[in-house]
Length: 271
Image 1 (tube, rainbow, N blue to C red):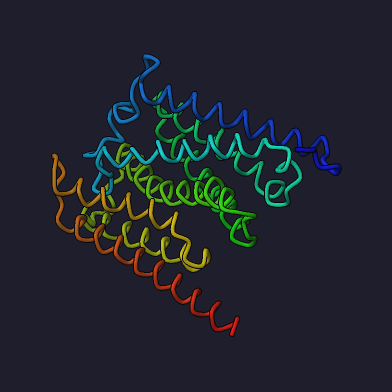
Image 2 (tube, rainbow, N blue to C red):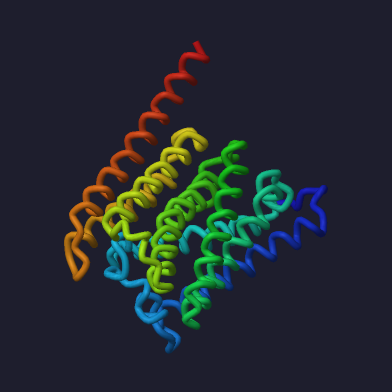
């Protein structure tokens, strides 16, 4: 395969930066797993991120989605190194945003490992903002093929949906650790409010993404495991469980409904 003639040094630099970012993210994940001798994420920060830390913390198995996300990120990092992707418009558009998300991911893990819970809240909010920006850039253009749809749009969609619910859980843990009493409203009330906001975020993503399935899938996955977590363990909460189930249902219904409407609209326009 020949190298495109209009590839610039900036294009090559971007490809390398994304690849390096992927390596940094994987190393961070390895450290965060505790395999390198460190403390696993769920046990770090004095246990502030365990399944029983707050009413909106998902159960442990929810975090297995990171395996899928990391696999997708690695696949994208390798794929975008191909000569044909060097000057592809969408890669030029989002490459550095993806790289930033990878570095921020590792920074979040390190902040938790060093028990800097407040810093981790700041980092994950910035990460969410970066992912939101990446998502908006992607939905404004069409992927060039099936591979790009899966490794770029699909991966970043899963990434955004999961980090959306993870941000809520992280902020709740940070506020709880800081002694925030919720203005006396009670943890159940706050859980319902936050989960309602998560549902709203899912609906907004569905609207802006025209029914894209990946972010809805990972957000629903997280919400479902919040519901599971509130029926087991030390922090059982029926209001939070019901709110999580309703939120998940709202996200699924909104996404599928918008997707179907888009299909009907496209079909009508071709007639």
